[in-house]
Image (tube, rainbow, N blue to C red; front, side, top):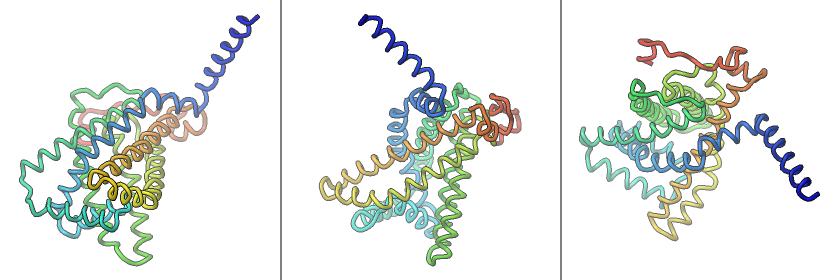
Length: 296
């Protein structure tokens, strides 16, 4: 009797698991586990801290003063930096600028930043269940870095031009939101080697924008206290730990939005059909054309 009862419970558990995997939340959780979301968000945070943030600092130092100040003000506002911590960041940036930048140094920083874009590329490929792009797509991580440099310059200029006044603040918010949608719409298209249709990437762009904007608002409220506390207790290394933790949480949001967007676009039903633009289940897939996508 006991063995029969145990077998019945196991059978029901297996049935529930099968049913759960067919539901939308179940597919999202399964896809997140398949891409090893914990490992991926840690890897992206580490690469961003070691490779991408130095690129931003170098870029802010090399750019015109108005653009560089706008970029750093935008970064500091996202982290909620103020007081002594803000002063330390300003001193670090000033020191970098005064040290001078060589062409070789800039190229090394730019190339090292591609380690982040390659890690992000692997996340998108796994989220969409696609194979690596191969050697023909090896240039795309570097192209993305060039694009993100342009994005930061535009953001810096936007923040500086729209500084001051409530009306300008609203305009700045709208421009930043529009820029975020454009960034997270273009990013997967480039890193996925153009193998996913533009229409199917709209949910990913919208979900990522909404998640990062909401995360930025929460960061401005809670991160300053965390930075100040850790700086008081552990000094500069405490600030580094806090920023690293912030990056881990940020990329958890980015990966979750990526998984959600991919599952929506690959789902059956009205939502999936709208996201793909076609009723076919594999309608999200796009075959790149040589010559056209080579310049994309």
